[in-house]
Length: 461
Image (cartoon, rainbow, N blue to C red):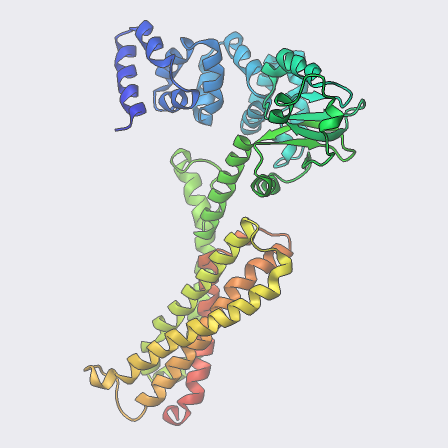
């Protein structure tokens, strides 16, 4: 049992005993994220009781870390006045995420609780496209002018710093509000008070566009190792900042979505345990039906070669071996390429390099598995199996060559399909491992029977 779970049991007992003073004492020293984890596990009634006795600042920060379901429950149980205080004090980016998740009617109700100034900020952030950097940014930052001195900047920070989302970097803007540079706070603190800001500038900075995709922001943070990045519009005017904690949330969501798609499941969009059973079945059924139809093509392909199977039943013994090897190799390649695309290791321009590498890798893997298949079939008469007779040598060659060809084909299909989907503007993760495996099953059978028919021609007549 974790420390939070142990404390939750104690809080539940104290709430039942109506000892709210002791409840407050137990919670007041908790970090907001731990308080949120504790409250998430309580019943709606207990959540409302506990939340009401939290200090105002802790309540706001805790609410930002709660699960959506807990936020919705508190919205329905807390009075409008109490909730308005929390909503107005929330970080703009966290509040935007909350408004995005709520139904339109509930979002309108929440907007009505905001002050005029905060409502304008919320509407501005909500005006950016869904999934854009503009939805993540906070308008709370410290911006100074290059004509100021270090002493001026420090006085400004003391006055306005408490409202800033981050103080690691000081942003320099011109008189019109265009971003012209960024300076580390460390540089400012270590400079003499009379130093001019323009003397500390090198006029080089990294910035995000408000309309950039949130996923691209993850790559930018990773590349430059920043804790915060400025957000500008197309003309260079500074709009806000995005901090690394918000980007980490995006990275986790994107990784979760990709993993779910790789498993042949439509992205859930919310925690597994919170998803309704009906919705869970729907999201899994879509791909299962698609894959089922694909496997029907496998049955159709086998039906096409039915006459050959009847004349040489031995062919059917190795069908599972052939199609599973092709599907597994294709799934491996697809997983590697999809992940490499997701984290920026490769781009569409690298398709030729990927193709060359996978041809060599696929051929090596195919020869390895083909050699093992050849040995297994060749040794069959000596292992007490039913395989024997004059065709066993030809069958061993047919299986070995088929495995080599099918594995090579599976690797090529698994590596190139994600790149093709990316080129067409689709999500590469859509070419999930089960989808590639199913597609390779059908083509693998065709390759197997074609090779076997050629090599075993004299035995099939």
